[in-house]
Image (tube, rainbow, N blue to C red; front, side, top):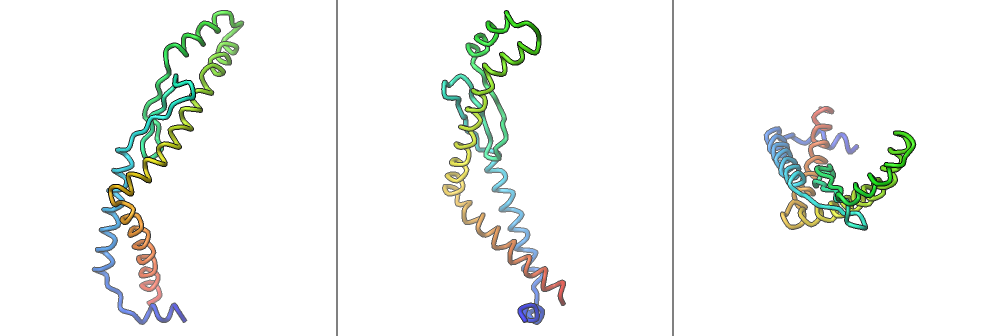
Length: 144
């Protein structure tokens, strides 16, 4: 029954195209906002910093030279390359993981804040509504 009601209503192609055009612009604006956001997550000891974008892409990783030096001092007495790799991994990896986890947490908060401050929340809701409306219109066009 609901499908029949959709097919009896006239479909405005120009209105649909305008909505799609606005949807594309809003999506582009949101993508640009996410690309511009930068946050720095830190390990608990502050010796590793991971810089993320709003898209949760890592753009920089800074490891304090003291942390590298400490790992380097330990590898001098290592038996082979595998032992050296393991020492470096143990010395640095946990700090890197901590910095990344901190950055992920911070970037999620920053994205929500930026979306609210720029009015993009309304655009996001509109994008979702337009996508739903467009899907309904496309379905009715297919049925006619």
